[in-house]
Image (cartoon, rainbow, N blue to C red; front, side):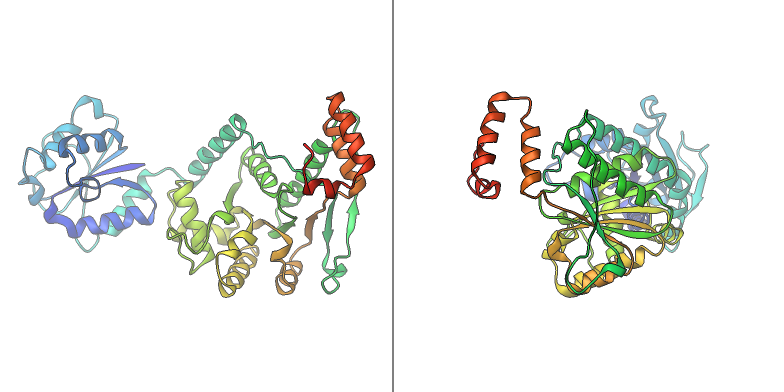
Length: 398
C-alpha cells in the first residue's frame, strides 16, 4: 500500500496523528512536506505521487475546501477524479461539516479530529491492508522467485561431517562429539552430498513444531549463509510458515536505522524496512506469543563485534526467550561461543558443528573437484603427493 495524503496545511495537527499511524504500521506514504523540496516542480511532484499511490487519503475540512485551487487540495481532487485513477482507493476523513467535493460526495467518509486521528487512521489501515498471511504469502513467493532466478553461488567449501554436542556430553571447554559419516552415492559429488546432508538435517530439526534454538557453528567460509539461504528457500515453498531471515552481520551499533534497546525491535524494524511488511509492534508481539515465526538469524558473531558485552548478553537472552515460543536457527563462528554463551545455548538444544576437512578428506575433495580436467587432475595429484595442503593454501597453487 502507498498512501497519498491530501490536506490543508492548516490541518497539520490531524496530519501528525495520521502519519503516526502510517509509520506504526510501516505503510509508505506521500506527504507534501516530505516530498516537495526547494527547487522541485510542485505540480509534477504531486502528479508523480498520485501516479504511484494505491490509496488517496483526503483529510476534508473547511480549510481544505477554501484552499488554493491551483496547487492545493482542490487540484489534487480534480486530478484523482480523472478516469486514469479510477482504480485508486479513495478514503475521506472528514473533520467538520464542510460539504464533500463533487465527485467524492458518494464516498463513505469517517469522522476525524485532532484527538482521534491516529486511532481512526489505524482502523482505516487495518480495513484496507492485506492480512499478515497474505503479506507473508506474497513475500515468500518473491523469495522463491528471486532464489530460482539467482541462486547463491557461494558453495560450502570445507563442510564434511555434521556433529553435535548434547548437554549430557558437555565437559568444560572440550567438545565430546557424536559424528555421523556421510555416505556418498556414485552419481553424486562429495560436495553435493555434504551440502544436501547438512541442509536436510537442519531442515528436519527446524520443521519440527517444537519451539527451540538450533545453533549451527563453523568457521569462516564453511557455508553457514548458504545453508541459511537454502533453508529459507525451502521454508518459503511450504504453506503455513512465517520464516524470517535476518543477516545479523549486516546490523551493528553504527547502523542508525535500528533501535538497540530490544532485539525484538531490531527484528521488527528489519522486516518492516527490508520485507516491507505492514505490521505494528503490537501485532508482532502477538504473533511471537502465538509462536508463528521461524527466525533464521545468521552470523550473530559478526553482530557482536559491533556492539558491547552488555548488549551482546542481552541479545542472547532475548533470543533464548524468543525460542520458548518460536523456532530459531542461529549461526555463528566458534569465537562467539564463550564459556557462558555455550552453557546458555547448550541448556536449550544441541549445538550443530560443521567440521573442516582433515588432510585426507581435502585430498579426496580436490581430486573429485578437478576430475573432469585431466591436466589439472595430474597437477593436483603431484601437489597432494609432495606437499601438505595447508602449506599450499598459504601460497595458493591455482
